[in-house]
Length: 427
Image 1 (cartoon, rainbow, N blue to C red):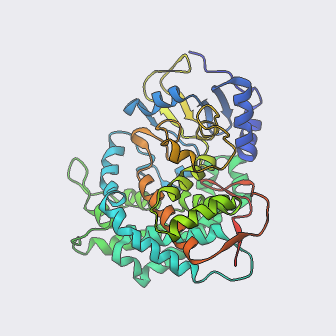
Image 2: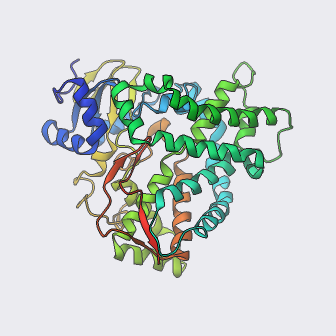
């Protein structure tokens, strides 16, 4: 029942390598150990990293034989133990059913114009002729879009403006390099005990729960938003969700996720590939649909996935990589390595959206949103949001990169962002 081989460095050094240079480190490990290897990282334990399609499929099709584990130690303190992302079966699926309708089907189509409106308003505030970072602008768009999805028509209530401000301050706190470095050294428990973290998180929790308390005194609207759905939700015994549970679900939805980062990367990739940019503009100008924009989004998520791995804990023994792995083993299907595997993607380092017009994305080789029963519930919504923002920006302004060189990958709190935050100019 031994785990696959892997680096023999002390756990503290492996933690440092993961924090500072995780993507090149994954590539070096694969070159040395093959498609399965074990990382032993201080504060996070042992991970069996999987980069073979068959093993990834086995994990994603194992159903409730696999449970949740954390790829990012910030997620536990920020989202809370009762979040839909961190809960185990069968509670995970019950919570998922509550919020899933808001991110699928007719709800997506109804929100498309809202996304366009929010994006147009943001574009109007962009400075002309001077450099600015695109990633924070994308954060503003995605925050406002999710505020409207979560709070519905009430999103315009001035009483929610402090929540917007506090969420932005929390995001800034989590992305400060010194806090990320301290997390690596001291581990996730440091986050929970940190006074700086509590100063950033406490006001967010207070503002979110203040709105919950106001809503609980009102009737459920005819067209319920996500807050109304959560308040109306009941456990199997008929009791409503407590404030702690509501806090965790709201923070899961409202905390800055990877969509803003992926948007920043999409523009970075387009602006450094003029032929691709020209074809995307032509599709928009000639009203040819979204096929090429969809391919651009998929190719960006292939080359720059928000996170490099998804992490699961085996709830039952499972045979992977030719080994019988015991209950409790943490396995990590590796998005970064799968997406750069020339067996699946010829010329993997080349940005070529056309590959997704020639062949659809593979279920177990294109996994930026994870897979199986725990696949990101807002995956379809995120792709639609990215395409709509792209369409609005490319039809309204001419962006150009400030630097001719591609931006390096920089580790942020939840995802991996452009090193210069997507530095661009209008005109």
